[in-house]
Image (cartoon, rainbow, N blue to C red; front, side, top):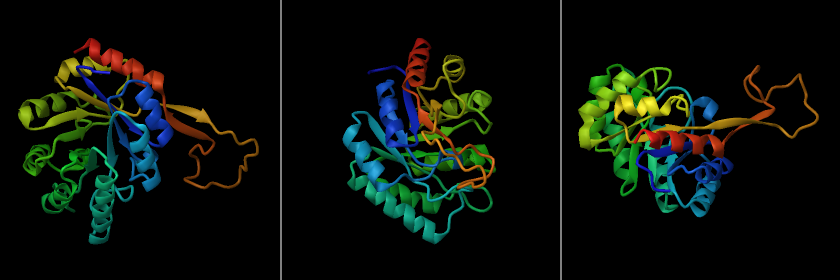
Length: 250
């Protein structure tokens, strides 16, 4: 589907990636563990997604949850994951690193960018955690990446739409500014009109109940209190409605 506003779906599994494609997304950002903000998915998921998707496929390269300040061992893992993505025929990778002081780690992120070529590169929401937005944008521009994913340094992209509009203005044709976080059919049109963005990013998930009949209430495999008997999966209908709403604004 050719659209004026490109919709990228953040998919936490092969099932979600296929649902995103069915809903009309033009590109998938493939990851795992969205509850931690996303980490690198498995090799099998990446390979099968590349085989079964006809749309664009970007892969999040993030070795763990938590902050974006990585040691040399973690950087080595990311470099190897990037190499795998390139050999698997992935279209792009999604990366980002910060220094302990909250600046973009230009030197080591630059090494990841160089390793990724000729794939496209998106600098992810590490930008939103940087100490200074103006300096961080300059650093991202200097890295020569194609795209910046941001919520406008707020809890949702709609809340951060003022900064997103300013980032679009400052970046011009040098960088695609792609808002993400809390985007849905009810706010995407106003967000696009307020910012002038041409790409948007969302998970579009629905919760699906576990098929388990027996459920042990005394044991938690993850964080106690978080639901373990439901699964978040990209909802093709939600993606479809966002694609339609986004392009009413185009």
